[in-house]
Length: 94
Image (cartoon, rainbow, N blue to C red; front, side):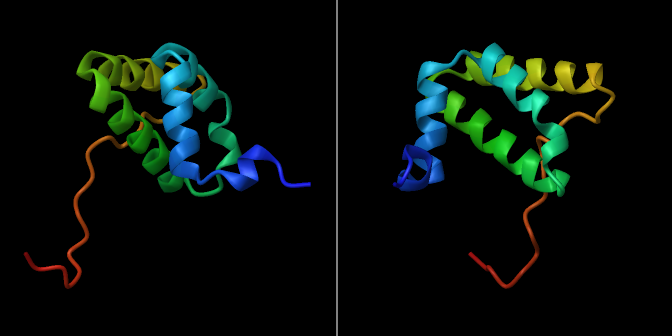
């Protein structure tokens, strides 16, 4: 039998999580699972996506998610999230 997590696209699952969880709770959950990501860049991209979803509703909630996540990562001896990333310099001209 298909589970909800398998049936609903990841973007919608993240939107639902942002709608029902406070930034502090979601930051705590993210920090708890940082070690499960083999590729840290994927973790950072997911964190940026969640911060962007919070920012759609309230910039203060997005800032709280970022600061709480970075603080919790440092508490666990991990580097903070790379919040600002350069766009790839591929063949995407405006």
